[in-house]
Length: 149
View 1 (cartoon, rainbow, N blue to C red):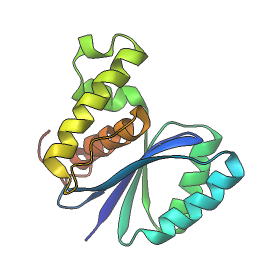
View 2: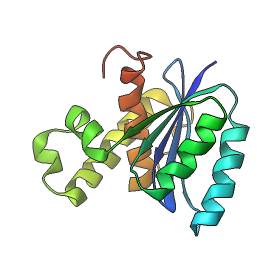
View 3: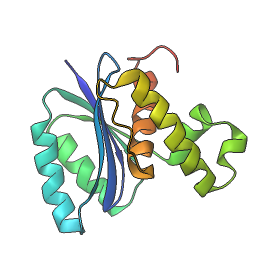
């Protein structure tokens, strides 16, 4: 079954893996410590996920190119977005007046998605993992795996 990995980019990174049935298989956050460790981790992470078709990365800069290069090498389609891309679709305007406010509402919405789409209902979540879940959820519609939010 094809899969989509969403990444909230940073040395401290959020990750969320969805399958083609739009189920959230897992989510987590990881502090890679530095750019070199991130590079090694990206190589291993992308190698370990079978049938990864899409990599959705929220963010840019040098860290994006680490993910992009490894994904392209493996034939994985890359979608780069910014937080405001999914926020416009998934949050109300009043929920995103400030970045901090948007992060709080992102956590609440991610918890709802976990309840609906994850087998394990583990709800301990930080803003990095929440933003990865929401980036991935937004992308499910973009790649036509999900009809509507």
